[in-house]
Length: 380
Image 1 (tube, rainbow, N blue to C red):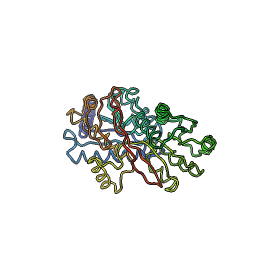
Image 2 (image 1 turned 180 degrees about the vertical axis):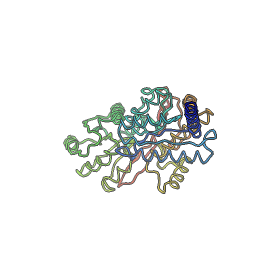
Image 3 (image 1 turned 60 degrees about the vertical axis):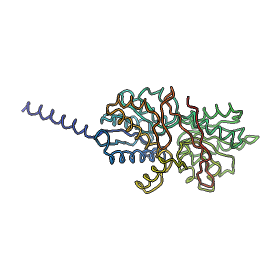
């Protein structure tokens, strides 16, 4: 009986191992509920579309791809648990997250296990340095996008004096404000006031009162926020009759900027984001068609194609490595050059390992989004 039990356990382990090897598992860490859901939800949809297309084309190395995507619930502890879960299920790589704080809750666990992680939307340029050599970025860095909107505010909007509001609870928002201030003041502009708030705040009356009291009146207000505060801040600023331009980064690349205040108040808003809207490259056109065919709607924002790009970046690395071993995938990712993503070409040529990608400047006028210009970064 004892021998039979041992044999049964061994057989079960073998069967379990064989089943685990039938698919190539990739983890997806996203906050599909909570304050980050308007970015992470579309990003996950983009990644799921990529998996469906890869599998329809025969999968990778003769196997189907399986995406494991537990909800991080816009909570750092839940994100860490989600990372532990997918790693325990034998993923060969991970993708996800649209914010630096949540990447830092999960990606270091991938680094510890020697499994590559590609963030689809977190933009702090020090992420690869902070996490390690198994950390990769599909998007640009916050320095590039902050410089882009600072240049636009100074050169095109004619802003010389600005007020800077910062969500002090997030690494991303603090970095965005710091890089914006650096660039704007280097160009000769002046920050005439600063203010702060925290993730989850819903009342900006005190900040608005201080903004309105500044004399002489500033030319613009820079609001460094995530989506949950983006729409609310626009609504409340405009409701108080303040008409100066509101400028920001890709945390404003959300439908909440127009749906919360409504089209009449969603006016003279400008933000930097990932090159995608109004781009006629074939990769963009095909992605929009495929997304609409799959989900019955246009992609919500640039984070949908970023999720798609992150998954396809991993798939490309697996094909080039001809291996699903995490170390081989990491090596192939590091050697990525000229990968033609929907959100722009990705090459890891900088020492920082942050891809030098173009940045779109978007305006919102009467609730309508428009690409104003494409900003090109320095390659180094």
